[in-house]
Image 1 (tube, rainbow, N blue to C red):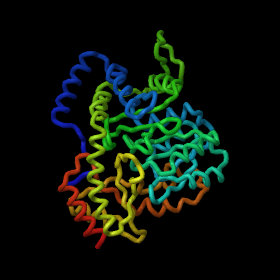
Image 2: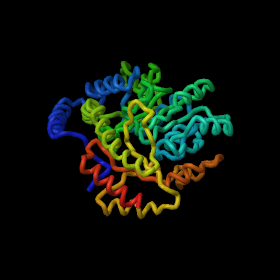
Image 3: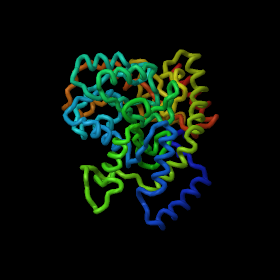
Image 4: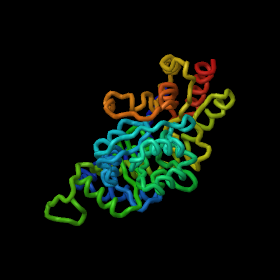
Amino acid sequence: MIKPFFLDLSSQEIVDIQSKVGEILKSGQLILGKYTEKFEQEFAKYIGSEYAVSLNSGTSALEVLLMLHNAQGKAIAVQTNTNFASVAAIIKSGGTPIFMDMDKNYFCPSLEILRKTVDKNPHIKGVVWVHIGGIITPDFIKVVEYCKNRSIFLIEDCAHAHGSQYKGTKAGNFANGGAFSFFPTKVMTTMEGGMVTTNDFNIASSIKSYRNQGKRDGEYGGLHYDLGNSWRMNEISAYIGIIQLSKLDEMIIRRQNATDKIIQTLNDFNINYCDTSHMDKASNYKFIIRLDANCDINFIKEEFKNNGIILGGGVYDVPCHLHPVFKNITVKDVLPNSEEYCPNHICLPITSGTTPDDIIQMIDSIKSIIIN
């Protein structure tokens, strides 16, 4: 059975982690120790940012970034085809989400969509932009310039985009800060965890306080300066992160090799998919195939399952503005692409563990289920 989850750790790496667990437990330094510091330093170096600060989840990373950009009482644009966390973080930080549609070619907004959203909602002061599937859109540099020129802060939700790069810049280093998730299913994992990347010293310092209940580095006496939370990453997770980061590029190459082989078949039969050929490097967290609106998506998913292939979660099967939890958020704009393509796409279970036999099995299933 081909599944959308693969934990990329060798037997030797697992033995190494087990040894480090014993070392960490014996040391008594279970949080905010040398492995947390090393992971942050190496992650910042990899992304190209000045600073990286670890947290307990990608959701916390988004929330604290929004708090520090004073989202309280402000309208924040966010695409509707995203994870619950992108919208919930805006609400929890005191902001009001304004839903944007997506471009069907990339499952992300476009500069034009953002412009129209801001024109209709001129009070927008911030944007949470999700690099869906690890895709950095071709016009994202113009999006960054647009937001900068209008004094709109721009936060990159990079939960899918570890290692994604466009025109020499990695996701998480384009705008006012990036928020990464290390949930088990992500391109790299720490079991649970998140990271903020930033080039602003004050933001990085403040996050270190907020994640530790408002205790500032170098301050003693048990004083709390900021209304923070318990958002720390533990040392065991940080060590796993160090291992995963060291092989991230290798894992991405394996994902890309699998994707390239499947693309050949899709091109032969004119099947629509989200293309990343404009990018220097794509994480390929999700490989998105768009289907016709009149297809029976449940039947297709069941047929893949009967063929031994468990399809990954969509991006996203139900857009956020249609979820009951967000029913009180006023939707001012028409969101046609999201409502058409969210329920009519599939994501193939491509991971860094995808084998040549898996690729053949997926291609054969595409031919028998989608083409026929």
